[in-house]
Image (cartoon, rainbow, N blue to C red):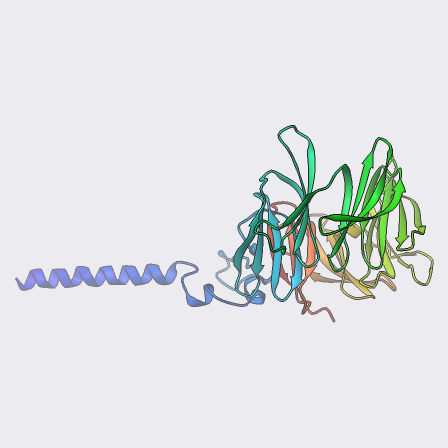
Length: 360
């Protein structure tokens, strides 16, 4: 009898040791793995662990695949996923909230307003016709205020406050630039025969890049009074980013060897163009002040963009982040404190938060 009791005690002890060992050794079971600030979870550094088991901390904000996002501030992101869900992510605790689900699930493109409360998106209907829809997510109705955008829309942009939108529409008779407020067209701003074109609304004017059939672009500025001025002429594969004030630009063009080159110009002072002597695409740059930008520059060896802070006055640059995963920028935004860069990865369509080194 005593031997049986002793045997039972030995087996119970072994079981308890095995359970505790497994619990303590399985990654992610400790309390510090479950909670933490965004700056802790999305560090670009590698954990100091055994040399044969170093795990990168960079992880996507969500398991979803996204088409587009904005960061309106106040520790939140609004994003559109490929299933047509529009979600809000609280970057303080990583919680997701579905704001609405679009009626169509085969979304091709999506553009969110700066405040994240409106969207313009496109899809193919059952007749294989491409359709464009405007939707106000903050309208009082259950499904929001929506409207079909008639015509063949080439490009669209929201105003800085997001309360208006510009649509560049083309047709057999030419085309025009329409201004809407909510679901209603309130102004026909410009008659045009522009073919391939991109519109932006950086300040109290609208920016238009028009491309010819060979890929050469001209940059125009349309003022509210209807005047249209050409700013840049005949540049191959032209891309432009306006400063927060709308007074300065960085732009990139491709040379004969198909490499991008980055340039700067002060539009307000009508200064000459400054060659920054940097190979970067302006579409992968982000203004952080009126004097500096962050740009993603392709690592020549690895399939990733590295992030540099660049001074537009002299072209000096400083490496501030090398991701430990492969990232190619599709879209990016900076949080309000300026220490976290949100990046939509063109490789896997995931949204990442990357901790930056000090920018000063």
